[in-house]
Structure formats: structure tokens, C-alpha cells
Image 1 (cartoon, rainbow, N blue to C red):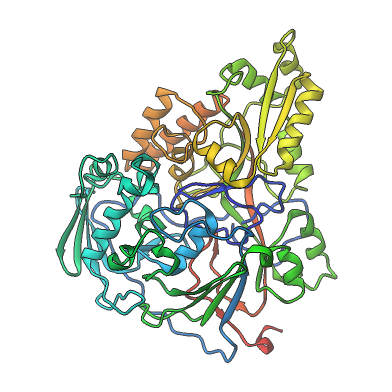
Image 2 (cartoon, rainbow, N blue to C red):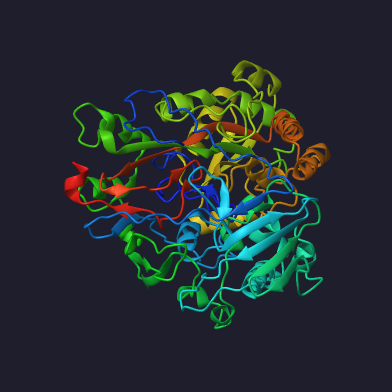
Amino acid sequence: MGRERLLSLLLAITVLLTGCRFSLPLSRSATPTPDFVLPVEASPTPPAPATVSVTATLLPGTVLTAPPVPTPPSSSAEQVLILAGTPQGPLTLDPALVRDVESAFVVQQLFRGLVRFDRALVPVPELAERIEIGPDGRSYTVRLRADARFHDGDPITAADVKYSLERACDPALADGDGRALPAWGFLRDLVGAQARMLGRRSDVPGIEVVDERTLRLHLVEPSPTFLLRLALPVASVVKRDAVERGPDWWRQPVGSGPFRLVRWTDEEIVLGRHPQYRPAPAYLREVRIRIGPAALSPLNQYERGQLDVAAVPVWAVDRLTAPESPYRDQLIAQPLLGGTYVFFNPGVPPLDDLVVRRALIQAFPRAKVAGVTLQGKVPLAQGLIPEGMPGGPWEATVLPYDPGEARRVLTGRSLRVEVASAGSDVAIMLGQVWRRELGVEVEVLQYDWPDYLTELDARRLPIFVFSWVADYPDPEAVIDALFAEESPNRPIDYRNAAVQELLAAARRATDPQERHALLLAAQQQILDDVVVLPLTFDVEYLLVAPRVRDLPVTPLGILGLERVWIAPERATR
């Protein structure tokens, strides 16, 4: 799903995407995330990307079974976790409509689907106890857990799953525009799903209820990523009678996940343990997420002992990792499967001229953004697909910095461009560099966050800084999400038939080497068309209190909290 990823947000979840992975540009604080380093060295060298162990292809004939029931930890500490969200808080808790990271994180705690990601980002059964991929790769037979329950205690049945997936494909949720739904990017390979989202039918025949606990999912063609996408919020199971209470049903939801919504005020969201969640209830009794004014200055709050987890701006990393710092051993550096980019919209003049786009890119010293502005704490992007993404390597050739050539090709031309921003220092840097190096007239357009998202959806922004974190561990979740013409997350009016053919072939390919070649070719062609300049690959810097155990910080961000627990203070010293 995909909206901008708020870099100041500690809840850099995967979830999840649901296609909700846009973020505010990098100057806000830190670019957060991969595998953890305890402690982070006080050095300008960013952490190496994590190695994600999930395979890019789940082959026909694969059978997945639920993992063993975990053994609860023994702890006398109060099982309460305190986090900071963002000042605006979640935009919605409807799994079918989630487009922003914070909403996705909360939804992931309240609702679950057939599949979830484990800490290695491998898809494992969640509400299902067994999933079998048919020999042709087009069918998935799912057996539900007998003890799966909604928050009100009612059993979760195959009919509930069918209702939830069909509802996610209902164009009425997007004022009749099914292409704008997160499901368009994640569920459209189910037989009949596209027709449902286009308003041509009222059901999705590819979702077949076999009996109360069994259903079969039928795909139009084999997909190497379908099971990964079933782990996203858009595939969560919702309760029909709760949804039918009215459009604001999600403010008092009856969920299917490990936590229930206890309270939502202007300053705090409180989640409580769902005692009937299986295979075992959450270890935490309560999760408190500060929003509104209470979410401001999370680092200061952490240092005062008021938060258990806090995002760390890059400018604070050296101070926190200094030998005398009491927080040195509490800092985690987690590279994310995400990056920050400058987009050049070819649908907005004068950016429809490739010569202009090339000159603007050649005149901007992107290496200084990573090396100076961000103090070397995040790596320079070597392409569009982040380091650590399964199936790599993914390096590509990026147009080199050459301000002399940029000045030469623009000699004699009078040029005016607009750079859109929702608070990015990089947008201001772009304007300063182009005025100085090229004599270009630059206007920086400042938007508030809702208007910025509206303009992104309409693909009207000319030049803008944009961060994206993958929703699932596959390069498709970046390159297809941002550049496929049918993607609801595509932020620019970019069209290239050759790229679309490569992306379509990669969606069908089940051979890893073939997919790798197709996606590499698509990536290089996009870069050659100079519609995007990769800046950095994202790294999440987090402070985590020693008493917090088993926090699932991954290359997709923070996942579900059901196995997090709080150790006694004496055990943390």
C-alpha cells in the first residue's frame, strides 16, 4: 500500500504496508532501520544491510504449517509497553483502506489474516493452521485454526475470510474507483478480483468456501509473491456485523488480532491484550501509543524515562554512541528495505523534456546528502531497489554528478521549475543548488500533509523528495509499486511500454534468475529515463529500553507486538 513514510515515526512497520509506505522526506529527523547492531559504532559508516532469509519464490506444491506454540516468559514486571506515534495519529483503522504507516502499525495489532511474517520475514500461517499451494501454482488451499476467535469471542470461519477479502475489493470503499484501493495492488490476481474492483461483479469467485474451516483461493496465474501479500493489512479478517454498523465502525472495531482497542483519545491510543488470541495470548497486557502533542520530542521523552522505544535523528547518533553515553548499548541500527528518492514528473512541463531532467539530476550532488547532510549514517543508494532485498544483488548505473555538462546542455535556456515539499530540507537544497549551478528559477512549494498526499495521488507534483519502504520482502514491492502503470501508489505520470512489459513478465516469473534479470532490466530502464534520482537507502535508528525484550525490529520495520515482553528492572542491569 503506499503513502509516505514519516521518518520521525518510530512505528516503521511493515505492514505493513497495505501499500502504505510513503514517508516524509529525510531531513525531518532520522531515516530509520536493518538488522540490529548493539551498540552502533560512533562512526560515519552506516550499518550493513540485513540479509533477509525469505526466498523470493514460494514454489507450487509448498505446504506451510503453523509454527509451534511459544512458551510464555516468566516475568514479574508490569507488562505495559509505551511508544510514540505521530502528532496526527492514525488516519483510519479499516484494514481495507490503510495507506499510511502509523495506521498500518495499529491495524496490525488489532487485525490479522491468514498469514504473517516471522522475524526472518518468512510468511507463516496465522489464522490458518495449514496452507498448501497447488501443483500448478494457481490455487491455495487454506485450513483455518479451530480456535481462531474475534475479539467478541465468535469463531473466525471461512465465510468471514471470504467476506473480508471481497470487501477489500469493493469499489464503493473508494467512491467507485476500485483502482485506488490497496487491494488493487495486492489482491488483483485472485480470479474475479479485478472485475469486482472495476464494478463489473459483486463477488470474487476466486475465493471459494469449501467448508466452515476450509477455503480455496484461485489465482489468474501463478504468482511468486501472492503469499507474501496475504500477510498485509488489506488481507486482514474483519467481522461482518461489526463493519455493517456504519462507516465509522473502525473507531470501535471488533478485531481478529492479538490486541483490542481499549481507548483512543487526542493524546493516546491504548491497546489491551485479547485473551482468546491463538496460538497464545499476547505477553503484553497493554500497549500505549502517544499521539497528538504527547508524541512530540520522542527522544527527549525517552531520556526522561517516559518511553520504552524512540526514533533517533541522525544528528543524535554520535552523541548517543559516545563512550560516556548511558544509552550506547540501547541503540539499534536497522537497515530498511526502503529508500529516499527525488522524483521528476514527466507529466508536468518542463519536466516532459528528458534533456531538462538529465541536467537537473547531473547538477545535484546526491553523495553529499548521504555523506554530509545525513552525516554518513545512511548509505548512498546504488539504484532503486534497496540493499538487502532478497534475490539480489540489485545495483544499477545511476547518472553521475556532472554540473559542467548540465550547464552546457542548458546554455541559453530560460528555465523555471517547482519543487514540492511537506517539510523537507532536501527540497530546499535542490532549489539552492539549481539556482547556483544552473541559473534556474526555482520555487519551493510547501504543502501541509493532507494536501501533499492529495497532490501525490493525483500525480500533479512536479519535483519532490519521496521515501518508500517495501510492504513485503520482494523487489516488486518497490519497483512495481512505484512504476507500474496500474499501481495505485505510482506517484508520477511515467509511461514506458518496455518497462511495463518487463514488470508484467516479472510478476508471472517463478524462476528466481529470470525474475532477477527482468527486474534489473526494468530498474535500469527507469533510471535511464531519468524520472527519479536515488538518494539514500533508509536506516532506522531506535533506542530500546533494556527491559523491553523480543521487539521485532526487521528490515520491514516493527512487526506485531504479541511476543514482546517486559523484563524486571533488576534483570536489565
